[in-house]
Figure 1 (cartoon, rainbow, N blue to C red):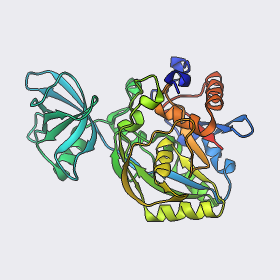
Figure 2 (figure 1 turned 180 degrees about the vertical axis):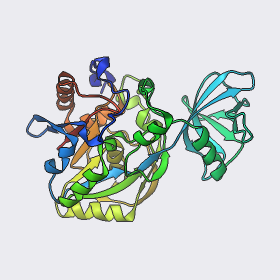
Figure 3 (figure 1 turned 90 degrees about the vertical axis):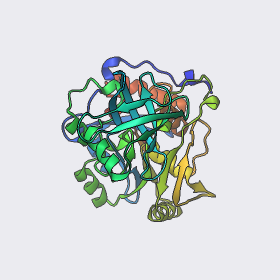
Figure 4 (figure 1 turned 120 degrees about the vertical axis):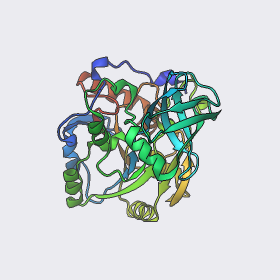
Length: 347
């Protein structure tokens, strides 16, 4: 398919530049039922009444870390790092996106204090990324990221008025436990501890998977044909407990509801012969219309960028025409779009 088939016009004022600073579950929720071609408007806190006892919600528990570093070359030029992933466990070598003119061998310094965090540019790993070697590793390096790093919110949200301390809380799901993402799995931002408790009380089960969000999720599509786009691999993990819960629910005819496109991609990546497998792997699954879904029965998702892989995924699940019609309804009703925006429940 052509990328242009996943385009739409979004008024700039509907792009959410910062989160709602109240209860997260006050965000709006558009419920889409493709099988009967209906749309209905709700608030996210109504989710327990929109689901059924026995439904199994699957959430991505990956945690965002302060992956944006601002440094200077020895010549004084500004350089920006977006940390994508460590190239080995507890190692000093990382894959990064770099803003600013650099070449192999350049040293970038991030701190003028006694700590002195620096990195040396290595080779290009892809058109978007470089390898770099920091002067520390392990916990010392991680502490440096915590002290000097910034929350890697999307570029369109940088005009927000929140402090770094506030962003670290707001750009994180309440159930995040496994650090490793450079962007939040944003469909989960609408949940609150009270909402999770209410869902449990109503007999709705919950479990987690892990996909550490990186380039595969947020890198824009730069080709015209979907078949020419190459997804970057992202690390994904499914526990034996989650695999058992999902397989039991499917065997009993209960619905599997993925929270976010990252949960969808993780679940579908680990399906083999109709059963969900546990384990850890890197996935570069690219879901477009025509994809044979094996695991999920419904999903919760935010409203995505035009021509993005995320819009293609939800179009694969619900149908392109259905999703574009839902998006037009959301625009007419002034829903908030993108990472800090409102949500959609596709049943």
